[in-house]
Every structure is written in structure tokens, then in C-alpha cells.
Length: 252
Image (cartoon, rainbow, N blue to C red):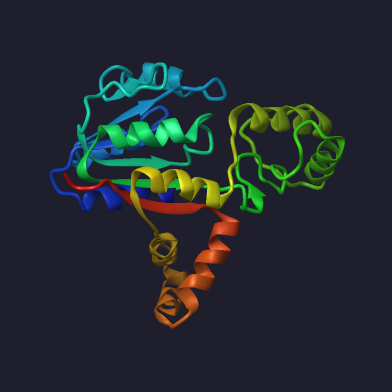
């Protein structure tokens, strides 16, 4: 399990006895790990076309048991059902951010919490294909295609499968991010979240967690205690990685 998923599970562990939803859970690996650790967690996913997660969830026997399918944008749970909702690298894939955040708000109890981890458009590196700034170009632009092709030919880029040529790789992966990602500015994201929740940006917590997760980097975590360092570290982190938003629903 990668460090971000461990961070999510450790965050969930702070809520003893809570009923937890992993929104956008994919095949349900995090859900299974959480349940094995004694956490009361289930998952839900829309299973968009750019992923094999639904087939994997079905093969594992999780689909319909601890993993539920979202249909027509509505979570299959009653209002106020969960104490905590987590989502990791999910909200950059939803078409309608406002409707999604509103739905998360609906299934949370009054006073409940949501943890959202996902990149804004501000991030330098397009994390799904590993090409810096690929998501900053206009869609279908020739400069973007040639830029991505050139960087792939130079050895950059990440993906599970391999296209036969660098040119084909660039065409396929750009089509994928166009079809399945929706990058928004940080200001737009926070504007939507503020309509439904009280929010805190908590990248400093994640940075500290990640540094402590690697023994040789652990001493660097102390730098976050110095005046002025956390804001600078967080500003840089948002450009290199993602936002970490902790949201709270108003108590009744």
C-alpha cells in the first residue's frame, strides 16, 4: 500500500467506531485493508470507462458487498449515514464537482468530516501520465501533442501498458486525460467546497506524515515547526502534488 493510502487509513483510525465511506474506491483495495484493520469502512465508485476497477471488484467478490456502484450520480445510502467520507485522487475525475460535493454532504452526518486528496489544475506534473504541464495546454492542440511525444521519446511519462511507439503513446494518453480528467483551479475547487462545508487545507499534515514514513527523511519533519516554513512548504507541495482538504459539515 502506498504512503497516501496509509495516510488515509491512519486518518480514518482517528475516528474510533465511525462509519466510513471510501468514495471513488476503485476495486476496493483500501476498503479491504481498512476492514482487515478493524475499521468500519465500505466503498462506492462510479466505475468510469478509463479503468478496469469494476471488473477487479467483481472478480474479488467485493462488488455488491463492501463495494457499491454509484448510479446516476447518487450514492446508494441514506442521508446522514456516515461519520467520515474519504476520497483519494478521485475528484479530478468527476464531471460535475458541485453535484459530487453536494452528494458527499448529503450522506455525511451533521458534524461529520470529509477528507479529500486530489490535484488542482495548478499542479506542474500531470500525475496520470507523468508529463509535466500536459494538462495546461488546450485540448487537441498540436503543440501539446508534439510536446508530449517529445518528452515521451526522451524517457518521461508513466503508464501501466506500453504503446508500440512514442507517438502512439502520446496520442493514447492525451486522449485518456481529455476523456477522464477535469482539472480545476484551486480557487474554483475551494469555492465549491465552501458552499457545503467548513474547510481546512492540511497539506502540512501530509508532508509531515510522508517525511516520517521514510527514516532518512524523518529529521526534515522538524523543519515544519519553524516559523514561516509550513506555508512555503504547502504552497510548493500543491504545485508538485495535490490538495489535502479536511471538510466538516455543520452540526445540527
